[in-house]
Image (tube, rainbow, N blue to C red; front, side, top):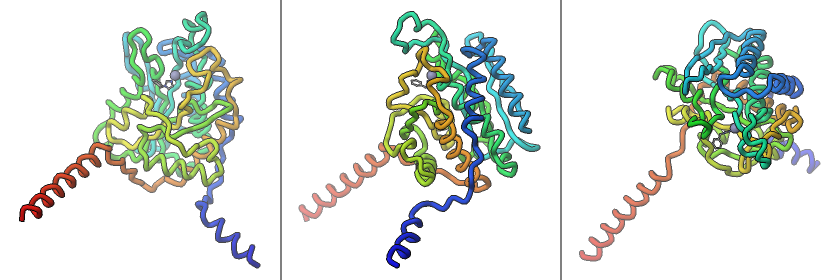
Length: 327
Ligand code: 1BN
Ligand code: ZN
């Protein structure tokens, strides 16, 4: 009798999630391996052009409209791929990943590998693979609220004078102020495929958006992967969105980065369909439950404001105190 009373009470603490996600890990893994089969995919390379065409064909095969957002950087032709569903491009939720790979494995312990390009199974292909599988499984009535963006030129920072996050910076520069104010959230997936995936909270990300996704992941039983601990601030493709006051979240394996990061070891063998599945299932559930909600995700006040307010209160109290003492 006592048990009967306790069980319903305790199960109420977890959020009720009615939606059953369709995301398929092995299908995402297929997209990851296919991208790697093109070889390393640095900006401007033929391999990247083939991969771009694969992304476009996959998206269009699932009924999405696509456009290439072409730009030139350091005399290299680059292109972001943008996908939307339905007659107009007016999504309130953006889901992004970079699809280029680093031209040098400069983090490899073996000096002979450091001048070779990275294959980018995790760093490039994993986030892209989750987006491609998402394009298949998202319910039709949710799709028009979601834009998928595949960024070029994210991962060449510090090589031959290149910056990081070039494609996402260009994407945000092209947004009108009306577009900016209609976007509720941007979620970035980067390095989500390692077989020992662990995700700490990236600290540039909008905390209220991160809280919602992290608590959803916990409610779905994934708090071992979506760890409730603070990581580091990463200059990644979500950053230009934050600078434009768009709430943004980076879901990235970091603190530390996986041991394969920017090495010759970033290969499909070190990735797993389970990791892709967990991230895909959580993000799909987030998008479905948030679709049509127009949720606002406030950014926390910077520490500076708290210090300022405390300072003003301190000075005011001192003035009152000295007056009272004199009187
Ligand atoms: C993510 C994956 N990044 C690079 N590959 C972003 C980054 C930029 C990470 C600078 C560390 C330093
Ligand atoms: Zn990288």
